[in-house]
Image (cartoon, rainbow, N blue to C red):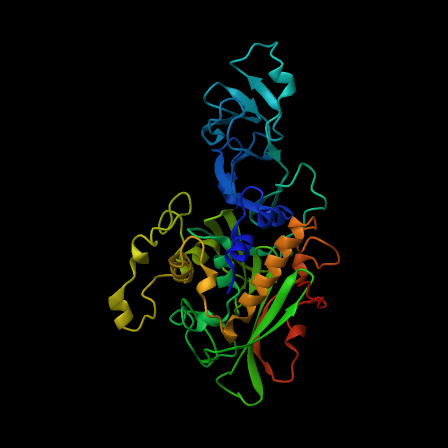
Length: 428
């Protein structure tokens, strides 16, 4: 259980909140690259850590991320005209380039000192791995941008689901690192079968274990932590374990166990204190799943399952259109799609879950680790320390990988996957 103060340290990201400062010590995904592909196309509103932003691609193809509200009178630049290498406010015609420099002030005389002295708030920006990334902690990032885990080669197939979640980021991330829930909540989509490992087949993820109470083992690392969920396999249970490893890359990225077709990662990004953006990435260097197929599998296709702002048509207000008749016929949740099943649980906890009322068990070991580690990280930041996961030594994201499979009981799960880093002593 957490005290109210600890819960706020973990969850709050707006303004001067320490956890928001931790987040600002990392590059943040502001939107999908596909949302701003067209030079001089429509600018895109975005929101991170309680700040409203506008993203656009100018005439020359350069990306810009600016504070959304025009410095003149505060009108939204998301309504603006994107033309001739700048974004022009509709209200009085003030125009800014991707660096926030003033290009024109149509309502002001040529002699106005505002033309020479004013610069709008602009943020460093990069494009990689299907995302537009922004640096929100000053004009000069202290270290180079790093290629994300899911973009190890230019040929890698990358498919991305994006969905808005109407609750705090921490309860979303806790769902991503909770291996135990998949055996119940997602049991219709992940049925038990005689397979060698997680197998994507016929719109299902078949799995070789009916063990709903995994044994968890955790190792803290320089970048966060990794852990293994050990289950009894259907065959050779006396000599083998079914192992699923999960990697938490602080502060908001999770590598979850793969299947036979593609690898999987999630980013659980704070929009503000009570809203989050859920990104689910499927990728593979030589195989993978196409974008349309991935979104259809997740029931997260824009224009079908989601509106233009990635908000769900199945949501808490309409009880996720839960089908009780389907449940009587064997569907465990009656809710379409793995993401919506998760979100029905996350959002039902309230905008910010009251962690003082919980009763955690053995299957919640990773949840406890996440809370201890991130609360300690917020306290260190508030005391003048740096952001967790931002200091050396630490591995490159592309050198990390989760694992899934049946192995002999004497196998060290820490050696599975790709290049895990040495453990570090706990800082709390």
